[in-house]
Image (cartoon, rainbow, N blue to C red; front, side):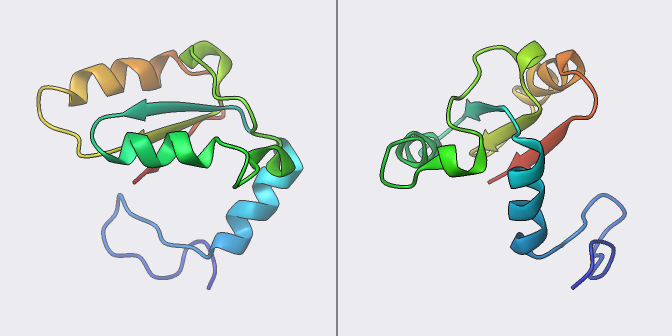
Length: 101
């Protein structure tokens, strides 16, 4: 499946995970996590040694949006939290990516 195939909505694009893994290996993204619910516990487990994010070059989660390439939003975004996430997104340097779980 290509990156532009399988469109559901103008704001949602589906793709295969092989493309994401190859991109991660090539550019070594620096992730910033934003945990909102129980999914944040899963993100902490992903950063542990069992899953080994260092093989993708993304071993250390960044505490600042100005140092990160990828924002991982783990959990449900409510109306009250959306403006804060948008502010963090605006502080990230280009190119910037968001993964929502």
